[in-house]
Length: 156
Image (tube, rainbow, N blue to C red; front, side, top):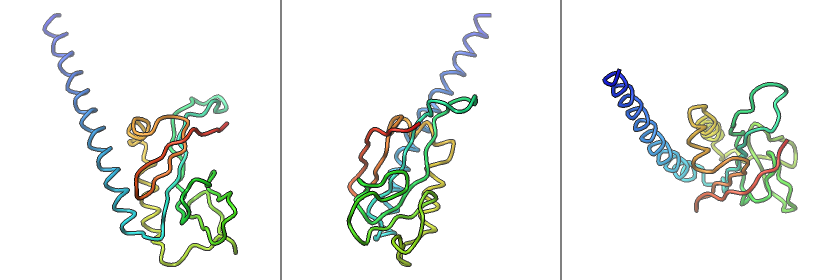
């Protein structure tokens, strides 16, 4: 049994090494992707999303999730759940949680296809552990050209 246990232990160690390599590579690629996104979408100043584990899920398991991203020309600090709550005129938001009306007009120059692609990348289930490791749980993340800010997030 000792030889079998040793082989099993070696296999587990290989899995840990692969997970660590994936984590490191995915984090670097996500940072690179974010920088490239801002280069290709100069009218977007911030990307904002919430990520958290729900406290209650109607009997279903409470699992960590990364929410929809909101893209905006503001600095992102006054974006809450896809809406701009500030008072500055001319601020727009784009994303699945955003409402487009007369006051929220996204300029045609904004590459919304690229925004949608970024949203899919950061919400991919395989990225959950990466996003948790990078930013934490129960947080709002604000990505800008200068990096990432992380704030506590209140949710149900």
